[in-house]
Length: 237
Length: 195
Length: 195
Picture 1 (tube, each protein chain N blue to C red):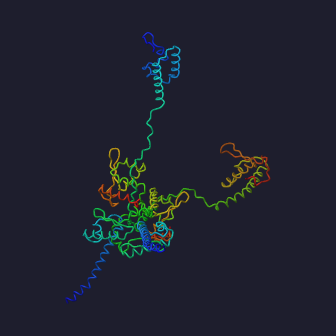
Picture 2 (picture 1 turned 180 degrees about the horizontal axis):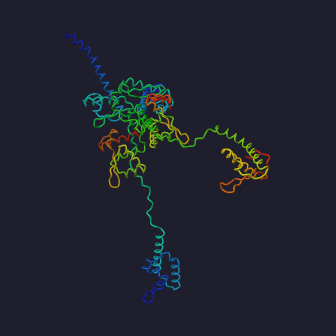
Picture 3 (picture 1 turned 180 degrees about the vertical axis):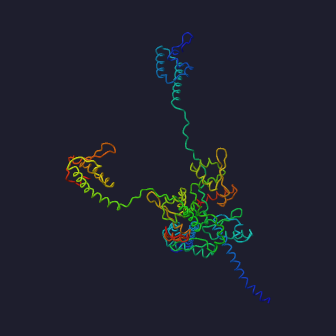
């Protein structure tokens, strides 16, 4: 037992061990800042070194350590209500299902009623805005395909003819204005010529360019490396 | 002359008897027809209007006669006399489970019928208790039973107290007195055939 | 020894007879129960399913026996054998006028009845079309009509095709053949048969 005198406090009342023995301080500390294992070990070592084994101080140190651990645990684990156990089914007499007595009952609905309401429904149906579905109505394929075939078959011949005309206009090779070439032709024919020119340009038979937007289109005939005298239908593909 | 009349009367008697019997048969058939098409309990006044009589006693006597006849036939149908002097024609409960599926009207399924049986047997019973015993799906049963007018719900603090209605008692041909009804139900539940 | 067996057999016979008789009574009562709650003609297959037998001959024999019993009772109800080997329990026509006013419950409320009328007139008709004409609340009607066995729903791609059932035809006294039924409806409806 250490003899306590106001003048000489025992060693454990000094830092760092005093934390464990000053209860007012203990309640204020941040538990994470206290290394309990270090405090206890060094406390024991110091006691051994001094040859003063004090069981009461050891007990207090142990109690304080436990208190610090408790504080840490409380901070870690938020205290929650344990999950509610599924409501216990009360054991009670469970009677069998009570089947309602079955009674035949004539119903008052007749075919006249059915027809009366039918009349109303059909009138209502006529009043319905006849929302025709706005889906595109496609003509039957048979109406399109033959015309398409004829056009595709003829396009080769028309391209060949146009190329010949162009070649003649420029006398073999050269440049010609689209407006000049199409002059005096009907609007639909002008469109057709323009489409055919696009086909020819795609095959490299002619080159097309325009000086500015909406300006004159110039057609260069025969500049391409392709031959000018043969049309291979396969190239259209 | 007197002799002739007497002879006539003697000859008439069996004819009169026959006519009376025919009339009785026809009245019983009319009552049967009324109960058959109505599919619900009918009181003596309504039955009397069908027979074109105001004598309640006569109607009751005839209805009971028809009831007895049904009893003696010992078949699938029965006529019951309810309180308030009402009569109903219905299928005997023991045949219900086997032919239920032929009914085209929407019927309550077994779940709600079990909840109903429990409420009827335990009433007045708190909704909380019914849920505890029957499970949470019983909330829907209670709603359905209430909508059908078979039970009532009365607020009591945070929970509700459930009871069967007088419509329920009539529908099942049970007493309106709860103690008596419970005794009747106990009898029904103990019958193995009522399942 | 032999004598004892014979005596035993003699004693057994009445017991066996009684058991047989009880079984017969129960089967007849089951048929009666089925016809009563169905309130519509039932075929031998359905009746057989109630009796838990596949023998159509047995069912027919029993149903005819029940029919005879009803005849002998000479009351307000009758059992009829229809063509297509179907049986129906119904009120004798002569009693209908006198008890008609007791019939209060309609088969369906107006909304579902309108939907049913439209389906009957336009069948086979897509559910989509019915909803377009009758509005979205008709989904609930269709469900109800299906549950009551008045219509059938057949999946067809993303929509369903709706038709009335033979129960519908029986209820309104129409032909089971849809083309004939539509002609009947149109005839009564007094509309040109086009559309």
